[in-house]
Length: 224
Image (tube, rainbow, N blue to C red; front, side, top):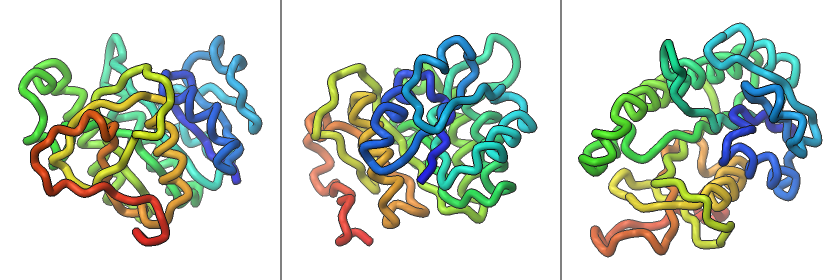
């Protein structure tokens, strides 16, 4: 099974590439920096894609012909629109055009219906990025694809732990390590129960005590 990972040279993307094979996926790494890509251990190769160029993104998807696509992209361009929006939309459209049904988009807490639960500090700091990611989420949800949107909390570079968890609840907030996030994303990729869902991702230990009725989304057959 081949998975195409966009944003592979980012701090979360690198973990995805490193872990993919242990989850039964052969990773093809795609990013914007041709100097960093060759250093990644991607069994299915690598390719450069300019995320602001929809045609270039489509070219990569067609050439790789993956079974699934993961978008771990992000970051503000010095000029022009945010790739959080235009890049993700290009990836979603390219997957649909190429007949790749399974798509996971890594977004952020504070997007969509979780915005009202975000802190004023976060909204003030990255409000435009959250808006761009929300528009990309909305676009993906409108396509006939087997999509999953995962919204991580505040990202850290902590060592991988088994305490990362998914929640089908926009009220969730907290932190999560990038390595733990990658583990959750790859588990979700192989879990049919996650299709058509927007899931929050945080470390269990960072969850606040309230509200007390938040339930973890279990990545087991019981959730299918």
